[in-house]
Length: 297
Image 1: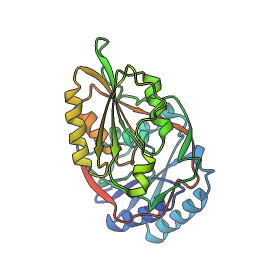
Image 2: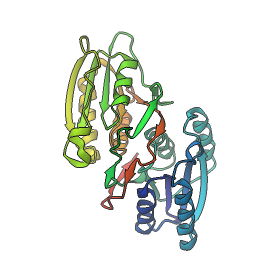
Image 3: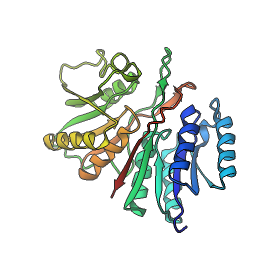
């Protein structure tokens, strides 16, 4: 395994899966790819085509491909699979392509990778546009759940504050608030006009009853991982008299900032709102100006 550059990536049906991953392979001189497949979503349109194209790219480049099969709907079993996998494997020069990762899986991978490595690279590719149809990006959401091994330390004498990095799925935000019934909501909305952001990221729905909920809002740049981490960390400290749960529902890159915040404040909890259905046209194209960074543990 010496000097073999390793990539972890999730098989996706979006165009940016192939375009982005191919770019990473060339940039980082990847020699081994661990391809995570969520087997309950292999039926999605373009998934089979992307898989066959990806295998050919790796084969033509002499890159070793190792499969790691998980099930999106079975998070408990995923932890068991990953626990065994990381116990029996070692890696060098790791790059994590989070572009098509579910947020819950990003956090889970970071949990295991930091046990193995003191430094990893991460990469995220924006699309050129998102699905703007009436059905939305996701639907049929499940009840929120705390991330296994990251459920914080709760004091029954403290009130609850939810920190929510909002995105384009209003239903997820509403369900998160309704489920936990907090005393306070601090929500973070992406600034800028990209992807019709000002129109589509409306923050919190008016249908939520606010009579007994204190609301605070901050505009952020999710793509600036360090700055967002600092903002979150400062606000967690200011809310030390609350139990705090954080959920990121904006760009996937915000999952990195929330995890950094957790590592500095492990009394807080990380939470996720799973979706049962995803748009087959979730996004289009790939912005090749990727967000690159390093995490040091």
